[in-house]
Length: 99
Image (tube, rainbow, N blue to C red; front, side):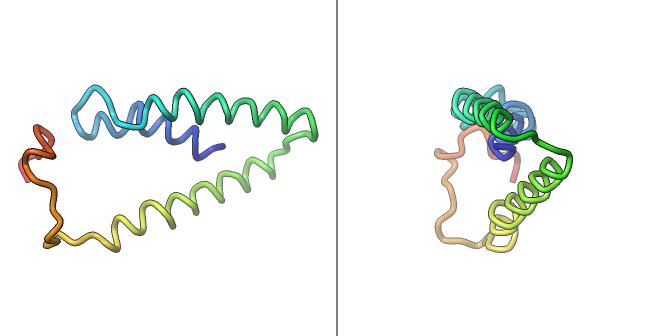
């Protein structure tokens, strides 16, 4: 749930600014799916049992660990600047960033 909220923030504010673009692919999906499902999940969970500070703390730790271990680490550790599968200039378009 927190990861889904993070997707909405990342794709809605962070990634498009980093790319100097108005839209980031994934924003509408995260806004229209992750956020409403996460809100509904929180309501349902709250109806079952109170959500305490320790629960939020654990959720943040798990979310950060998941993002670091399954998103950031593979992108950093497995990148290959000399890959034969590079994006072409046509695929990247105006997002080359002078690289």
